[in-house]
Image 1 (tube, rainbow, N blue to C red):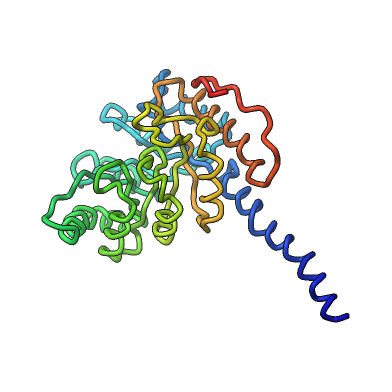
Image 2: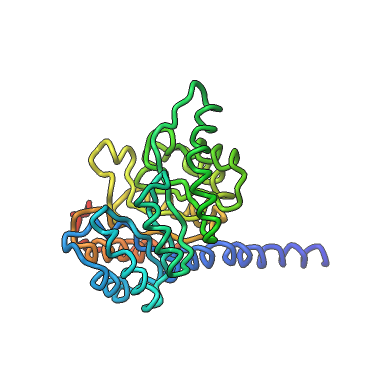
Length: 301
């Protein structure tokens, strides 16, 4: 009898344990409170200024925001950060140059003034070098002074994949491990990761100890070459699988929701939020309902 009782308990308890480590983790990871609005400054048909952008974020329910910019936007960055603080929106990250030139100093000055602690998202091209070891060392030389400046402000630096050598996850991991600095990690962007899709779980596992942020995108196999680089969530045939991979990886950091088109940024963010809302129940095994009707994209049937 004891043996039969123990087997019965194993059968009844095990599914509960699985449920506790599966859907609830995904629910928290993809909850609105963990979502970061990204690529909505130069990518916005309405060309919103700081006041309009912060009002949009509030209306959509975002509490986190990553700032991308062009030179024309830097004069209003100070005002924008002040508005974010006033409205309780976290400046989670800033697109940051791979140098400490005038633009970088402007950004750092505003960070210091407002005592905010954003991640600095840095990308670069091929660092040059005769072999892999030299390339890693050369990339680390560029990142180190930025990381040291960031550390003075209690900020972290995240290597941003944007294609090429520097955009390969294994190369970014190598640079981070070469630097051995506690405030340097990685931000991974699915929209720049089409070439990584076949090995995404392995790449994610390698990056995860260093992963500071992860930005979502609707994904199709070979999407970039097919003209489907930027899709709203739910419009890509691989989206559910990729969300499962992320949810089960152990990653618990911020999740970016992408603008990155020349549509109205609010409409594009709403499309992504609707797509994510459609995908999330499916992670828990609930059958899919009707696919969202997108405002900025013609969805596949």
